[in-house]
Length: 422
Image (cartoon, rainbow, N blue to C red; front, top):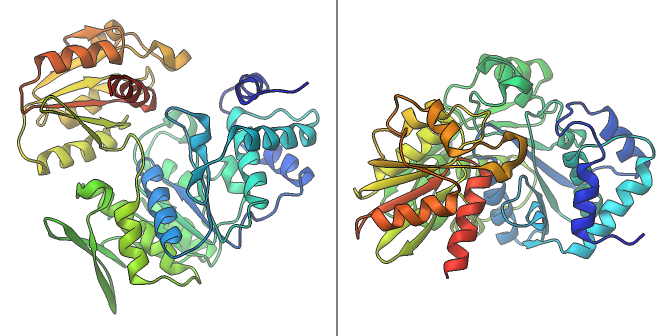
């Protein structure tokens, strides 16, 4: 029976009893049946608690500016599943994704696959047929047991290690760090975006002979002026434009720096013009994405844990002072109180929104308010992000700012609302 892309997405959601099932045995078995090997001559794999999507975007943009043909696999998507698979800078179309899912299904047999495993195999199958020079693969969850890790990376990046997904990855930073470091390969570079990475990450790198390239130790990202920053290592430095719409967010400088370090570690040509153009051109939806409505600045971000909230706070602190109202919608399994605490000094008012469309992990605004009792955010409930944004814009000062954030679901809702108003 012929299926459309929506048909396939509904089908693959039903093929495994659990949304998450860690382990590589199933996906390796199906990949072998599909004849999948390395999807490109060069592969960069990206893991981390935060910053993965932006780092993939920097690697992709710089490599494409160099003239390379690049495939990028990311997750989750914001508005369309097609966002997850890009070839040569373009989202793959419905017909290609359908063909890829058909290939996975033909090889699967009785092996149950999760939604993410289906998508990963589909992306690798499409990449194998695209004549790529470079594939950039974003880990879905953790690293060591993530489906993406069936591919051996020529360079691995661990952007950050923070407390998130503890039910799956372990209850402390050391356990989580070990899971993320599992994407590294012996004698291949492992780029680390934390100034002080967990000891478990460094131990694993040492054990397998993977040279660790650490930010603020082996390479550096340094602000220069209002429009530039400097990437530096021993014997080489380059001044570059600020990334992501010239925002200069400290987290984005780190992400860009890690991307450059990984590309320099590969045996690829890399001209300075490509570095500058790629850093300037890289863009990813839902990461400090800015809009303006009647003089009010609106910033949409996927930030969903305390580490991401701290990065948001750093960026807000670096911006011209504006009265800031936050529209916050959190999933039920996230540390909402930790997020609010990280942003408390930079936000002047809060509106809470429900996220019931997020499925079992969703939450209504009243329940979120109960979780935040005693914090600055425990007030102003709205059924959804659209309602909260409407209220926030109504109460915002003419030169104010509205920050809409809390999850990929929250960012997607905000983008739909803002796009509909255009």
